[in-house]
Length: 309
Image 1: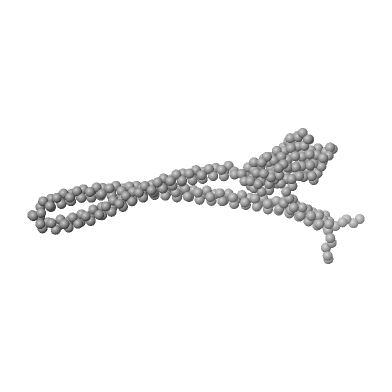
Image 2: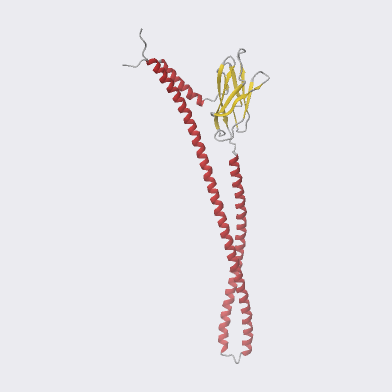
């Protein structure tokens, strides 16, 4: 049997479509009742002061003199008294909540609920767009810590570069001294060869031998001085190596702290994104559940058997 056309289904379908449209529309001025409402401005950064005004268009009914105010379904004011303006309007001043995701960049819903004299309950929905990110105190603290660590790392790096420059200079000086010592050693070997050759003629060349022996002693003193300088340079090399290892450990510690901070920051962003998605899913699920319940109740009332008399 073909099901008859039901106007209730059309009404329910229209309600669902209107509910979905209300999520995406950005109203600035609301006139759905004898109360005229507006939000000034409709967008700005997280430090922008927001003004919501309500004016009655019918002298027989009251105005929104007290209201409950919600930001993205989070209560920010209950039974708040409006400020009476010179034109008879009631004004409410709001500030953006500081906790993410309520202060994230993008559209946010402001819902104002009240009860108007001689009219009844009223609800107004506004959209405020946050166009600029304002860092949270936790983010500023982490950022300050990061730049402090970066400054310390820069200072250590400059000290390391200075030590490396001094080490390079000392190493060049050591290479020059080593070349001179090698040359002196070659000369010594040459003199030693001459000494061995002259030993056979010792008796006849004793005077020359004494002179050469004196020169040998002078060369030996120079060699001892070079050897002492070499030992000193070796000690300096070990000291520089020790300082380099200490600087390397500090760098690894700083790098580890930076990776940890970056990981915590990425985890916080993921949790904020997950919370926002869950809120959207909860809102849509609530709307669908309400519409489905209304439809089942109406259908049950219609399908109930009529009493015969």
